[in-house]
Length: 202
Length: 154
Image (cartoon, rainbow over all chains, first blue to last red; front, side, top):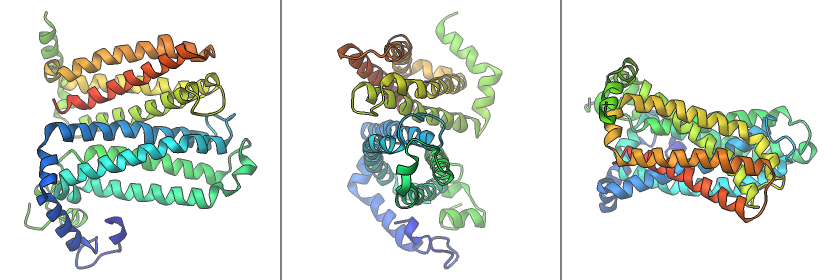
């Protein structure tokens, strides 16, 4: 939703839908279950731990597939088999990451929404998603021809983009916890614009 | 010198101070730790799934040959980054139960991986024994990850 509204500067904001989204996350923060999740030590900790475990499943399996697509490892395993056998585990990881990620966002909606790292993470997820779409609908269509042979360049490029994008997602995700660029710590016009923070907060 | 005093002197060390006083070092090391964790997850999983008969059709020994270097790279990176994180706040860690749970499960996980799981998979073992060892190894690493995340909460 946030990324869909990323359609260029309007009214001095990078996100055209900023006022609408701002109202939405503010309302979310007042929901009783958002407050409960935020204040519950165990539920929040369990959710975050599950999120980390799911990273091992999701990014771990993606990394193995990408290493195959880069023609670096598992070269005697057919590409089609690598994709088919790893995908269920990647999807399982994705489902858990989405649910726990949504819960973590709902526990701290306003701060996370304005977090520069969260926004960068969303952009990286978007890049990774577009890359997956390009790979699925274009690059891998003729994979029968290179199932065991040399992997074409287009496929290696997709794998390299995938690896870098998901690594960025992990790092940016981890950095959300740090308050360097929180609304009350910034005052440059550029940073205010990037984070969508109200100008009077700093 | 007691363990607690050792923790205090590590905390006072130049390396500990440098990491603790820098804005970026701790988060950077932490991120590296997390990236290596994902790599370890992938390497252990791709071998394990094959052992358990739900993964790639190639033999587990064959998959092991491809994945072993990532497993080693991940474990070494985790150990180095983990030590650096620990050096920056050893007194806090000394008091955290989760830290000791993590250390014990880590020793178990490394021992299981390098003295049972890896040798058995390399030999091409099949059957209940290697499957049990696989499940135990996965459970041990899972425990390490959960206890590790929990250090931040307890």
